[in-house]
Length: 77
Image (cartoon, rainbow, N blue to C red; front, side, top):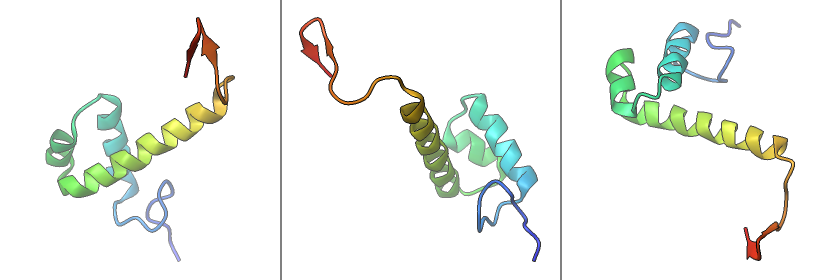
């Protein structure tokens, strides 16, 4: 069994297309523009953007030195 995309399991997008997708994401293009440039459906692009942003948020949350309730100048966050 060959893996067509080592970055996303069970993906129908090729690894080269996914790298291109990540490059456009890093350039801060919107979903519609990425869809046009990569010839992917906009809903597919939105789904992958959501997954990437969720993974970035999980990484930032785990790397954060703060957790729980924090008081700053009598304000709670």
